[in-house]
Length: 383
Image (cartoon, rainbow, N blue to C red):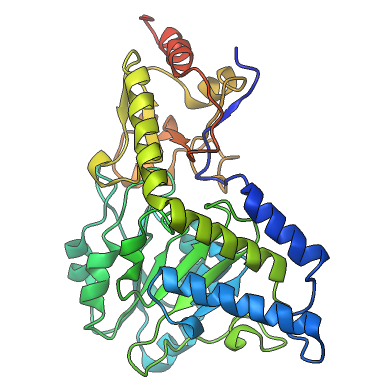
């Protein structure tokens, strides 16, 4: 048994990179000024740092500096994007929204709230591939469709959704496109440079601290997305997200984004190598992959092992590897995965899907063969 438990749950969160931790500490203890303070050098340095961070992070998705606001993470960004459009929808009579049944709860729950307020929401199902087709979205598009909200990368299966293709079509319509990019930001960078109106970003999926993220609000020419604030007080972040800016966390996100951009090709190669090693080792078990492996990020793999209960397997493997049954936000629940159920998979498959997710450089060396042997010998008619 390994002394170190291998951490294969980076889809839930990543470890803060050492370089990032040093930057956060500096902005907490040395350059600790309030970016809103205008009367001294401490505030000026903080304001300058935040501007540089905003400029760089916006640039990673091809947006302008003024089109990015900082938030506490993708959940808050999603809420601002979705609930912030409600007043415009009510005023214009455009109360129809298209989304998918495989979205994170941070999108589904705000949309259910809007549904209670009289909005009509279509929840599209992807089928066994786990991928929503562009055509299925366009088929549902109506004159009164206010918004399409589609995640970039599914947090349970790792399947990449066709957001870039959709963005190029949606830009020619009056319907706005929101993309929850919590899992895809940095990993599939070119997709997010497409003309997506609203992009939610999370820091702690790329080695930044928890509690920081961003929302890109991209203009269409001179026209702004007609968002209204859902919180009030102070007027920070273009009056869309009030409150004192968390300068240390913002600078941590900035540093993490720089690290990721510098090393993305190397990260992707290493992630693919890890995927191949894991699949080779699991070859001695009986399993199947949930979702379209041809359209997936390299660092997330969702599998169901024949004849095995996922929770029992997690308990058995707890001293070897840290893995999960799905979203960290719902992992306390033992109900079938809403993502796998929406894909039309049998209930026993949806209940027992396991997610392996890794971050090259953050995975301690451990025995994949030993892991596979443990799983194989737990299966009925052990091999």
